[in-house]
Length: 253
Image (spheres, rainbow, N blue to C red):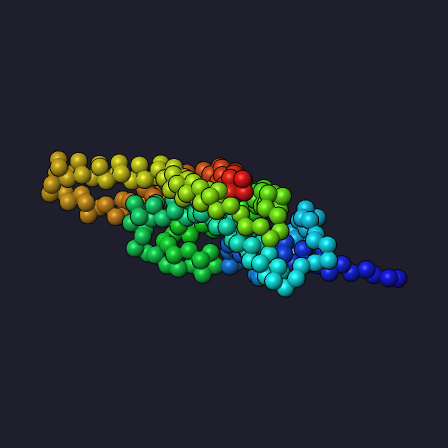
């Protein structure tokens, strides 16, 4: 049995694999260190097989110079799209950081090598919870499908237009801060009311020294109402997924 081998198709596959590898290495959920690199490599190799059919395979392959230039363009495209998705989902960890700051948990900051997040309890809880929700809900599939449209919008060897990714990056950072504030706002409002109540109690009865109860009271309020904020996290992850897909489309226009 004769087995034919097309070097041009292999070049196209490797270039597609390079773009996907950069995207997976930067964008959640597979950017998390909890996933072994062999799993990331298998996911990237499988997606590259599926997406190679969307690209035009050059006849006869590419020369050494053209191959290096094309590989650079593919790496840049994958990195840009990965950064946009990463920034969009950074809103979850930012919301946890705001809660830690308002509740006083920020003093227990530690580095989590698994999620590569430097933060306190709620920062790490929200980050790991978002990763788990991405996989459990299948929200990572729309991310990959949205990334797949990049092979139709940006052909092999083409650099994305810098104006569109720059505008998408600005929108991503703006949306990240807005989403973080929206996620953390209910609990921050409750903590503010607790501080306000302690302040009024101090004005009425200064001898009670009510502010000495501030730290344990904030811990109690945060633990009591933190579950309500975490219960709304699935809806927030779904909205952030839609935003990330839209950002990729905006960058590819």
